[in-house]
Length: 343
Image (cartoon, rainbow, N blue to C red):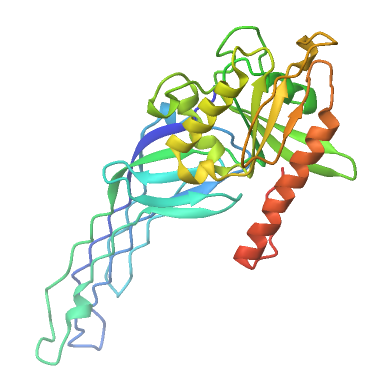
């Protein structure tokens, strides 16, 4: 089961209290204070793990608490700090404070981590309060409470190319034709109930990741249909492939509805480079005319058939070229030579 959203409660560890103690040593008539400090409470962290694909684990267990710090001891011994609690999530996870919507952090790469709740500081022992005028203090501090908060986790898939279109536009069929993914394919709306990922392999060891997003209908940005639940997943794609079936009643109107939904959901998403594909051309009669589609601002309009494998090579090469151009722009703007994540 694909789970891309979860709300959990986390509590960092409480700091240990400082100790009140005095030295008792042979030959030292006035030993003085020797109470040690308390240990720090453990933090709660999220860490990206490439072996995970969903937030399913956080559907079963909702509350997590890090260990507390140990109390200080005599002989100036500091209490042991609590161990950090590490919660593993898939790359692409974004964490928000569920009450304030504050962004706590996002994890894009395997091994990346972020603290979502900090442990409390350990209290000071009485040895810390010794002064020239107070040689035997009995003052000590309790440990601080660790942070507690409700955290909303949202998963945004990381892909180079995102497939968008209305239900039965042929997205799952295309993904199955060009990758090893095996999404459910059927001739009824909303066959795809969850996003699917696949890796496209091209000659010369070139690869890119393609994501099939559930169908988007009019009003999706307002919560209608299934696509609104997964619009967030195409926010991180480099290139969009807008798929319009040639057997649609109004291909131009369908295209404009999809573009309107993307713009209503996110201005940044609407700026993502996109290519338009007229799909299912195998359904046309040999002498039938291909519908004309105006797509200003697009990278072009192509005609393909995933079933008949018509013009798929041309389509994949254009998607590869477009994604690489975005990569080059990202490197130029960031001044970094880091490679884009590939599976």
